[in-house]
Length: 355
Image 1 (tube, rainbow, N blue to C red):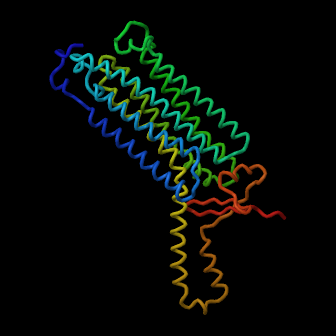
Image 2: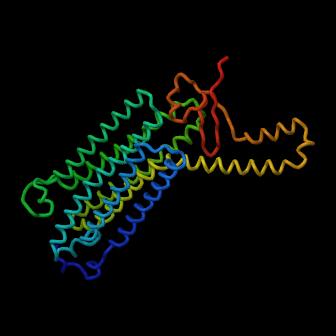
Image 3: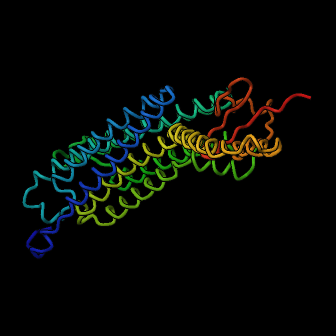
C-alpha cells in the first residue's frame, strides 16, 4: 500500500493521544481503588491476606502493561498503515512492543484471577469449596500457560511477525480469537465461583441477590473482555489498515485489566462502608439520646421501651441451617456463637437457640 494513494488529510489522521489518555485514566482509577482497599483491609480491620498481596502485584504489573501499550502506540498504533510505510523500521518496533505487551497482559490477568480465588478462599473454607478453588486455580494457570505459548509461538521464528525472517505463522485470527476466548472463559469461571456460596444460604431472595451483586461485580470485567475481542475482530477485518485499529485494542486491554482489579477490590471495600455505617449510626443514636433527655424521666415505661426499640429498627433475623451452612461462618465471621453480618442495613443474624 503506497502512501501516494491516499490524501494528506487521511495520512495525517492520528488517534494516539486519546488512546493514551484513556489508558492512563483507567489505570490510575484502579490504583486509587487498590489504595482505598489496602486502607480498609489493612488499617481499619487489620485483615490483609494473600488476595491483597496478589492484587497489589497485579496493580504494579498493570503499569508495566500501560508502559508497553504506550510504546506500541508511540510506534504507530493509532495511525494508518499507509502513513507508516515510508518508515518500515517503525513497524518492526511496533510489533516487537506488541508481543511484549501481550505477554505481560496475560500474566497480569492471571494475577487478577489468582487474587479472586484467594479472596473466595477467605469466604468459605469448606473442603468441597476449597477443592473447587484448587481446580479453578489449576484451570486458570493452564489457560495462562496456553495463552503465553500461543503468543510466543504464533510465528516460528517469532521474527517472521515483523518481517525479520522467513517461516510460518498461525495467523492473527487464530491468535487473537483463541486467546480472547480463553480469557472470557476464565473470567466467567471466577465470576461464577461466589454464586455457590451465596445461593447455599437459607436467606430471602432479595438478600441473596444483593450479596450476588456485591460479589459478582466481576461481570464488568467480562464485558470489557468481550469488547476487547470485538475490537480485535474489527482490526482483523481490516487487514489493509490494522494499525489504525490497534490503538482501540490496546485501550480495551488496559481497561480490561483495570476493570478486573476494581471488580475484585469492591467486595473487599465492604469493611470501609461498614465502618462508615457504624459511625453514622452511632452519631445518630447519640443525637437521639440527647434529644430524648428532656422529659425522659416523665416518660412511661412502655414509651421508654419504644425508644429503646428504635435503636434496633434496622435489625432483622432469619434462621440458618447451622449444619448445612456451617461454611458460612467463615463468610460472615463468628463471634460468641453469633454470625455477624454487617452491611448498610446493619443486619445481625443470631444463631437460633436450641429448644
